[in-house]
Image (cartoon, rainbow, N blue to C red):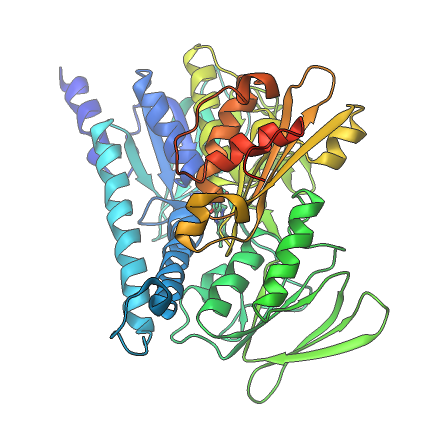
Length: 489
Ligand SMILES: Cc1cc2nc3c(=O)[nH]c(=O)nc-3n(C[C@H](O)[C@H](O)[C@H](O)COP(=O)(O)OP(=O)(O)OC[C@H]3O[C@@H](n4cnc5c(N)ncnc54)[C@H](O)[C@@H]3O)c2cc1C
């Protein structure tokens, strides 16, 4: 009876109970870790979640997905207000930006959701343990020991039958640089006290492109410098080409195939020297520089050397059940090799690990079923194979493309840029990939994910009713375009 009471009270504690053996101990309370914890608890497992920070949510909630999308929504409103007269709304004068209020709103959203996570941990009776965790080696008699160092330095032990590593990632820096008030990563840029007059973004993946888009809307002079020949390089080539054109039209200085040589501080800001695509040296100056050149897995100080866990360039290798080479130890989220570093991938990999531990059935992550979203203006949403990838895989490819310029809802929204591109297999008509650049692309892509998951064909989709007037109708037209049968273009 006494022991039962102790177990019940475990979720309230911030330190482990020595005598408790958890079914699973999860290290890291980001979207991968907290999702795994909740799902494991839903399966009836006894769960401990170890997080070094006071707050759950990880990069995604505090310095990633949520704050950036909150600010991008402010930017959208700002854009609408600037064009208010086009919509017949007059008399609002010249809008001004209260950046402090913008940041306050962003912070309030984060706080609300961090509290929501606290509530969910309690609801699911997950024991929350605060501290920095490390593995102590292989399991003994099937029980793993995780060492947890509290802020004050004292070390305790958490015992569990299984361990899930979910320690996430942090921004990579260019050699010799350290973040400060002018050389920024995603952390510093989200805390700037003012909108910078000018910003150089190094790296044109989703993170770099989103910040570039955001600050351009708020009036910064933005320069983007990318080493690869095209921006958003994981996307279909036509998407990269069109968003480059649209960013240039917005006055963003786009530099691809550019190799950064030096980043220096000047009296007033920063100076970036790079060799451009033609081999010529270029110098750009700005108030701030954002380094967005990828993210490194937090695997350096986890005690992995005491285990059989195998790394690939700092990321952990797992099988399709998210199991590492060390029995009873799983890895999920941004620290996993071979998967894109996205919150929804982390969350799903957490659900898979929880199912495996609970002895339940699961479906492994399929790379070609992962939606990728970039919340630029206009947005990008894509899933499945690009046209080039489908050809490389030996498919005979048929492509359908439909421009938002011909979609009535896009006209209503005043948002005509972009297109939907459908990549299909010519033989059976199976839809292999959908690539959207345009309004609400990050929402529209959900339909395409379901289509791919259910192995939909062009023939099935062209007879699937899409409501009118919607942006989703552009998908219907793009499926039709594969057979040269779009209605509205
Ligand atoms: C600017 C930006 C925007 C982004 N936007 C999007 C987006 O729109 N959509 C999207 O899908 N993804 C987005 N991402 C990526 C997304 O944030 C990550 O994929 C996601 O946060 C990874 O989740 P995770 O749980 O693996 O790791 P994290 O979120 O990094 O969480 C790891 C947690 O583990 C804790 N931890 C680390 N080591 C230890 C330890 N030893 N002991 C205890 N605790 C530890 C950390 O404190 C942290 O809380 C964005 C990223 C950035 C930087």
